[in-house]
Length: 56
Image: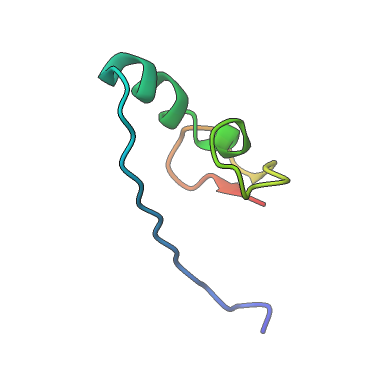
């Protein structure tokens, strides 16, 4: 189980200006700032917003 890799997809339509949305969504490590179901979001591997980054 330790080598298990999983993927997830979430979609949502939001009526707001693109620049405001992109500011929130482009920060990979800050999903809890806009996703109401995310209680925890911490970068656990790599550097935030860089390829290979993993969050919990």
